Length: 209
Image 1: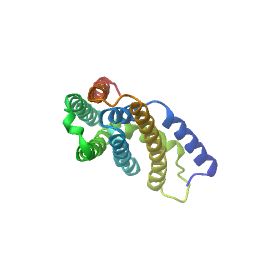
Image 2: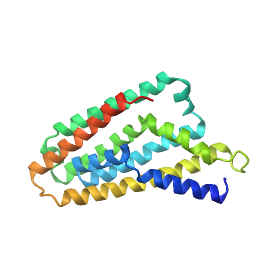
Image 3: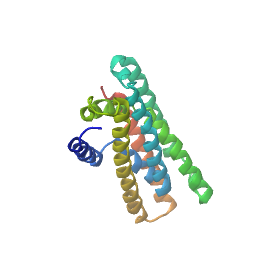
Image 4: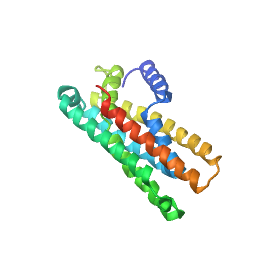
């Protein structure tokens, strides 16, 4: 593994990155607004687990494919953008009965988890982040092989980002909880959350690089 000083620099730098406002924070907050705290937490878990696909890809060197074959990157990015837009429209048009009762809340949380895993897997920005960020902290002369260093550093980074997402969900849930829990407010929260996801999808589709 890299030296202690390098590892400390990695943790500090990653922690700073993790608290900067970004798409995952916005996504987690939007799912919380649309489905409540349970759905938000499951969405954060889904993002966290989905990111391990990119950690594994970085460790295996597969993320280089996005640089080598731009059309692959563009295709994955478009698929992720369209999926976000579809999710946003689905939340925007959801009826009150969808979230009513314990069964409905559980179903909403399960859907948030599965959908969030897919959202993260289809997010090429995460793959490029690991590809660009992790190599700065690996040591070719270390006893551990490069792929294992990538896997360890990627896991540490993912845990830090996941922790911040959970904090965002809890804060969003507290704010929403202070609002009047009428059906009208719940409907508004779902629509706002859905609109945020649609906006994220459009932004991803139009973003260059």
